[in-house]
Amino acid sequence: MLISQSVQEKLINEINEHFQDALVKHEVLYDMFTITLKREAVAPLIRHLYNHEEFKFKFLTNLCGLHYPNQKNQELGLMYQLHSFENNYRIRIKTFFPINDPVIATVTDIFNAANWMERQEYDFFGIEFKGHPNLKRILNVDDMTIFPMRKEYPAEDQARKDKNDIMFGR
Image (cartoon, rainbow, N blue to C red; front, side, top):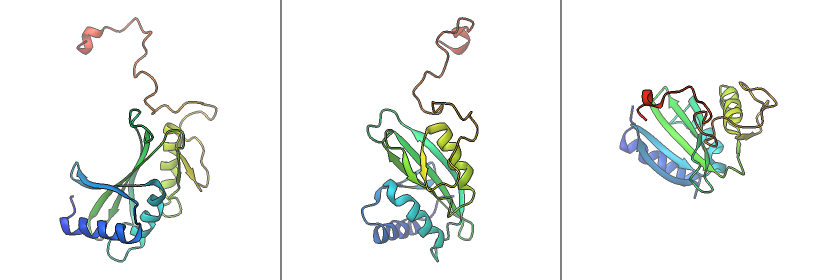
């Protein structure tokens, strides 16, 4: 559910008041109000919105990694979806950072559910969550040296001879 324009403006004003220069942009994407922030402001803002008397974003719906290989110095990112059950507000918070510096503060001290979500994004994207209580691979083998969700490898095995491209419209 898209939150009203007045609530969007209140959120923007709150961010600008308490987290100066942290807001990169805000927009409505796929019927959800989306805020893009500098990465150092993400965890403090989430804590602020969690404790805020009016907004009460007390539920982390989702946390997922992003990889845009052609976005110079912002190749990796994270997207958090928060929900305020009391107000029935949903927002998306995004941040981006260089692939050679994939570190961001954990939110496990705010949301217990973030523990496994952050481990998954570490496992698949190589994003390190500073302060995470047990950051290790969760689905892949421990000695794996790659991060399979990064778009660094072809989606299909180029050496396969047994597939018929005609069946795939090629």
